[in-house]
Image (cartoon, rainbow, N blue to C red; front, side):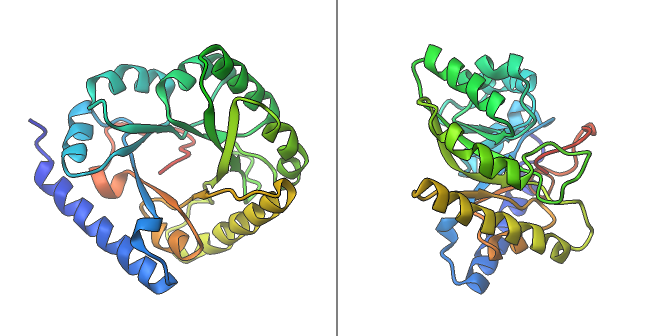
Length: 240
């Protein structure tokens, strides 16, 4: 039995209330925002407990951790890959995940396409953008993204569903707003280039997801506020 079930329920209720209030401020429906539970370093029991509370969308940032964890979790769950993906892990990522949120180059998209072709499936992706140009983070520079967008969109086994970003960490949520706004504006540019809508903006984490919702997030990636502090510290986190 997962011992933190009571606090997990309380945490989830608080998060859902915060999402609802943020949506109200932004004139949006709460159903327009998906809560992605970031499960990295948390055990399958924690995932199962969260699933029993009604959550269905979970994220992992390491293929090897997902490989061990996902088979031990309820089969009805949907999993997004939210970490930096190496080319040699693409085959497993395509097999394990419903979406890859962190595609940051044409070469990576081409390898995902190749692996999706071999698996006879279509792979939804988000394109990760390094909105602040941080040297320590992965992600497209906006200009390069716009230059490679059509080539990625032409890959037959790839579906571009939107953009993802992680702004610089700050104790003040408002400091993330310009970066969230920049990602939203970039999505509009991408939609103009493709002459097609991209439904998702994956942005916002435990400390700033309300601001992200106000700026148009459709997926917020929440781990610590839901599950509590992690059992280990990961370098260069991309999600939370």
